[in-house]
Amino acid sequence: MIEAVLFDGDQTLWDFERVMRDALVAVADELRAARPGPFADGLSWQDLQDDRTFVAEAMPDVWSLAELRVHGFARTLARRRALEGGDEISRNTLRHSRVPQAEGGVAAVDGSRADGGAPPRH
Image 1 (tube, rainbow, N blue to C red):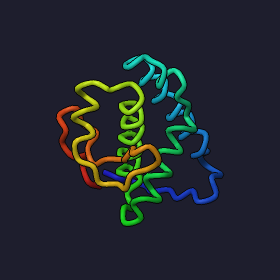
Image 2: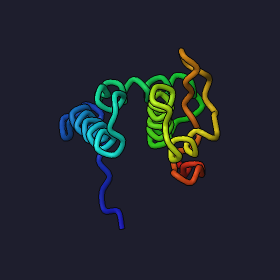
Image 3: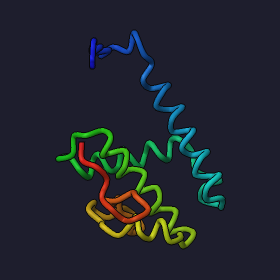
Image 4: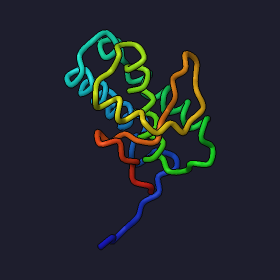
């Protein structure tokens, strides 16, 4: 049961930018551990943030931040696949393109699950 809901529009209670940056650093570290290679070695939290920003601008009809993060990470995987050739998981992930192509033909996509299914809608 929810007992309270807090709104922190001015970030006085919670430093959202720091927490998000720390989360993106952790995601980049996990990707480096799971799929080592030149792309992951050079990946920064800013790159992940840039992919999410690109997707948000390309999908103005999507308001769910969770969904935009999924699409942003799928775009990161698409860039990795374009550079390194990818693997079965990224091939299945990139099956359902929904976002306009960026430079170099890289798209953000609908799915991020290994089985190629669409992410949950929030």
